[in-house]
Amino acid sequence: MSQPVSAIHFHNTESNRKEPFQPLEPGKVRMYTCGPTVYNYAHIGNYRAYLFEDLLRRYLKYRGFQVNHIMNITDVEDKIIRESGAKNVSIFEYVKPFIQAFFEDLDVLNVERAEHYPHATDFIPQMTEIIRVLRDKGYTYERNGSIYFKISQFEKYGRLSGVKPDGVMSGARVDSDEYEKEDARDFVLWKARKEGEHFWTTEFGEGRPGWHIECSAMSMHYLGEQLDIHCGGEDNIFPHHENEIAQSEAMTGKPFVRYWLHCRHLLVNGEKMSKSKGNFFTLRDLLVQGHHPMAIRYFIVASHYRSPINLSEEALKGAHSAWSRIMDFRNRMKETIEGGENGVFSQPLEAELQTCMNRFEERMDDDLDSPRAAAAVFDFIREANKIFDDAPIAKEQAQKVLEAMNRIDSVFGVAREDEAVLNEDIDRMIQERQEARKRKDFAAADAIRDRLTGMGIILEDTREGVRWKRR
Image (cartoon, rainbow, N blue to C red; front, top):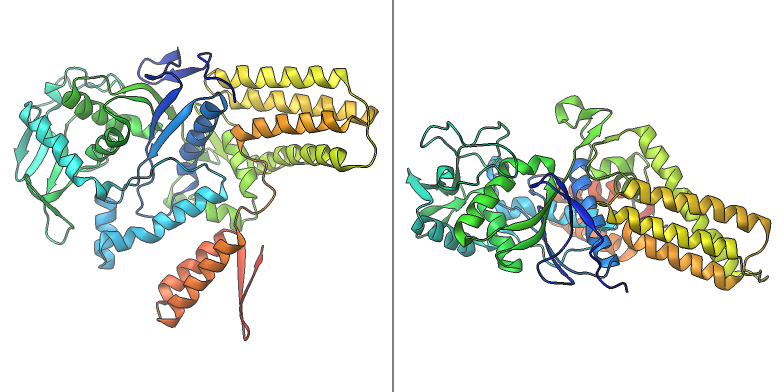
């Protein structure tokens, strides 16, 4: 494994420039990424962020860093409470299938698991402790049982997003967990109990936390008061990440995050994804349409995270073609290694391979420039195929090439030929569906069937039992 290097540069949202990456502790990276709000199935735009973060995690490990990665699960907030109330179920019962679906999607897309996936509802004591400290330091006030953060007390508010609190009337505040309008208002830390809502009893009374306080509590619990990297989509910059900075630094008096990295939006046919426009897709939707999960992954990870990307049928077909070229080349190496005739060592091939690896690393070091890194790989594949066409190559050299491709794929994570669904996982889900049908919970049974269909698994109910096959 390579030793950690300082050649990596990241574009820091806070400074708006590329900076050399130097973690707080040499060789170790404390990384926090905003995970799903599990009020519904995650859409493909959400996975743009999760795959960018997976690429980042993988490349840090490629460069020899030990990564401690935390991704939260937001299992209490406005939409969850509204939807669970409409269905007359607890928030915990409501979010369960969406949490399960999220992890299934991660596996389908070959996303490495973070070290921890904390649930917000497990960290109420930590949140109330932060609020207590902020109260004692004079950063909060109470209105009608809710606790608000006074942004006027935090002089550095707006340094991440550029949104300034100048001119805001004293006491202008917002209770909603998410708001898009770019005006700075005092944000809620603790929401007073409302009739019919899930609540916790604390020293602040009965209620529940605001959205922003959740991430500060979970990140600091696992990573300490200062983080190396904090990631999310560009829509998280304001208000969520701006408010995280304010409450965290007001509490500790220390810089909260060294490097802020944000990915741009994923568009669909040039437009922002929206259910009303009919261009809203989950991963399952794309799989049912026949797109291979590794082609979907390649489409996203081979696009620069700081550039918006446009999802279209043509783009996905292009990604599938590129992914197929990688797989065909890998298979050619395997056939050479396993074949009967042994060829000769090629010095030109050796030189091309070294050039490829150097360019791959140089370009990934440059703010994760994955499009140019991928171009270096395809340049090598083109030249290597020419060399293989001219004369048989030694098995040992083909093995070396394959090992280099494996090393590159430890970052891109696309060299998987199966459908990314293990047979035992399928069997387990089918058994759960059968049990749901026995207890006449047909909604749960149908939901499991829909998840399997989204993974490309077709069920057939026969006299002998349930059979399945891949689409």
